[in-house]
Image (cartoon, rainbow, N blue to C red; front, side, top):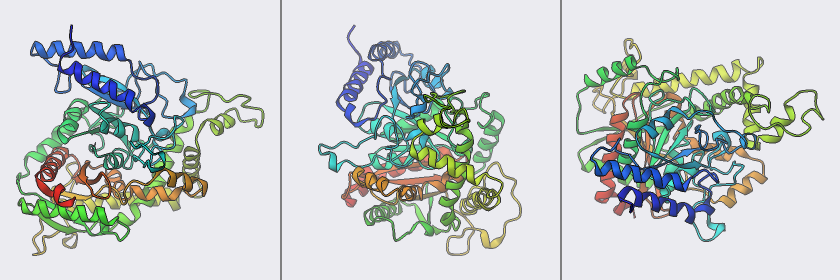
Length: 507
């Protein structure tokens, strides 16, 4: 039987996987050509019968290699898990398969999701397309493999995890759409944890509509994951949203703390042009303030490593992971050599940092203070948004804390639009130079614009904007907790504005 539309699309994706294999988007040997063709034929038959399982029936969806699958290895791009095979698939993978989606393979990442450039991988770095290696740039991290696989059409879309921006930053640097839902909307069961209170499964796609189609399949309560919102809580949020008057004209917030002199001039220019276009379409733009933004990044790099140091304790060569040869030769501790030998430099660095901040002598000065900063970041967002947080009991507002429109009217904003990244993607050669100088802190600043939404658990999406100095830059739309549909709608509006001429003006 000849291949139908879905089968032809799958065949082209597989062809692209071979063509771009040298870029390292996929972990080797995780795509089964025969099964992909077989499943796509079955999907074509369902479409012919008028009974597709979902909007993504037969589409190839790549899976980040820290999300468990039964038929492919789950290595987290780490030496310690090279021999690991999960006995179960993550809930999000099960839901994709139930909707008829086909697993396109497992994608490369920074080891255990720790990094901003997808270079900390035992499989080697993920590289941007380019004929000259000296000109290859970072694709962002830690979900660079998922973003590159999507942008080069090796799959329809990809699942990835976002802890402090790991979906949105790679999307911005590869010209794709990266959506991080509200924390707790999507199940984390079967996801290898980096930082439990921050990790969120997101979607990378080539359009907002495609991202929404995948999101609609994977969202929902999971009784196996206590961090997912219950059906009752979801009903409470929906009731809260239904009482809000819906206005087609959006009030868009611009945090003054994001107007940094370090922001690349080209990104600032495109940000301004897009806001002007949105104004012409009838939306209003308002300067707001998120004062704790200045401390958010420091708080994140205390909290995330602290949680990671606890989560990664299981990879000791006994419970999980490969045992190093002669593990007790230099130490009486059973697993010390295994952990030192099998973890990469960045993972070891964050485990040490996290272990220190959780120690009795440092916890009050670092971890507890970082948690307080996190609460202040959440409070900042709650003061700015017009819609109140649907899960908080609201006390009497301090009049000085209410966002106004300049005329003293307390209205707040519907969404916030910011750049996704501070800079254009750096050359991989410059990242190697930073490694030689042993200064890892330079990469941390790339998370500056994405971390606050992660600390607050808010929905956020990066939308690509054509850029003269580089192929694309990303603009980020952030909404109130639980207001994921408005964020997606606003991203569609932004996408439409770019198609109608803002992108041409920027070029």
